[in-house]
Amino acid sequence: MLSTPRHGIKLLSANISESIFFLLGFSEYPKLQIPLFMLFLFIYSITIVGNIGMVLIIRINPKLHTPMYFFLSHLSFVDFCYSSTITPKMLVNLLEKGNTISFSGCMVQYYFFAIFVVTESFLLAAMSYDRLVAICHPLLYRVVMSQKLCIVLLVGSYAWGEVCSLVLMCSVQQLSFPHLNIIDHFFCEFSSLLSLSCSDTTVQQILVFSFSTFNAGITLLIILLSYVFIAFTILKMRSASGRRKAFSTCASHLTAITIFYGTILFLYCVPNSKNSGLTVKVASVFYTMVIPMLNPLIYSLRNKDVKDALKKTLLKCFLKYNIRGVFVPKM
Image 1 (cartoon, rainbow, N blue to C red):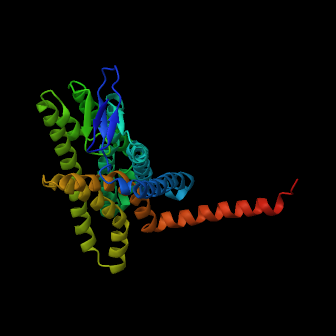
Image 2 (spheres, rainbow, N blue to C red):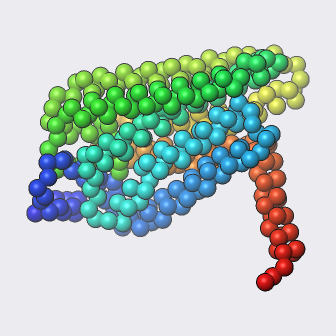
Image 3 (tube, rainbow, N blue to C red):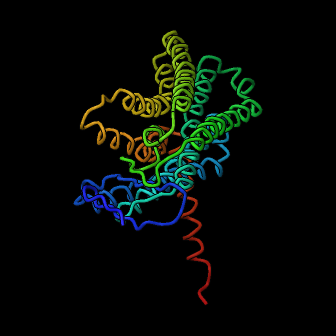
């Protein structure tokens, strides 16, 4: 039997060759396990309802069948998926003492997480370009943002996310790990895996740095350039009401971008210290759980079209239920 008293983890030795990873998560705070479980379960429940609800509302309302909402529906789908890749396992670990995951399970979790995170960053960039065309070239909006272009941008986002994830996952599979490993995190984070390897990780570090720099750089460049042109166009408008209306169409997207990239940049800027581990965990909770919960709220509360569509859908369901209750005879 192997025991690590500091973290209260025990594991019976098994005759298997696959490496096993202990996800410490928040196990250093045993009194907070149940409160954290309840909090994260509540956040995850809102995430599921909000994002799936957003997808359904956009699909069943013809008024929302536009390029902007086409991308928004997929943003909600991606938020739901990458939160679901991390949160269920974390919830289970908060209730169990043996927070273990196999190497193959770790690879599957990271594979899907990386796909959806990269895809989200490129979807946000595509949505910035959509707002640029809508505000700067409103008469050409339907022509430029054609169905073909939207599909190309969407498929390209998913495909590039798949490429990044697959390359990084395959590179990690070339490494060797001890049989028992401890990850001071609540999911299989890439840099944590590299730090545990017995092999030379130079290639993997170069790959993750290259992909991260390229993805963040190109998407931020598209977003910044788009909003520079949008800002100039809005400032040239003579009507105050026109400026307000133009800005309001970008407000939700700007808020989502600020939260998403602000959290990621904060993680890169955290200095190495005794408290940095907890800081990284809290920030990781924010971008793996809180952001997917906030996005549908941001786009529904700050968007008149979505609010109107939601009201009409709820009213239709309410009336349908009441009409059935009144006119359908009881047996």
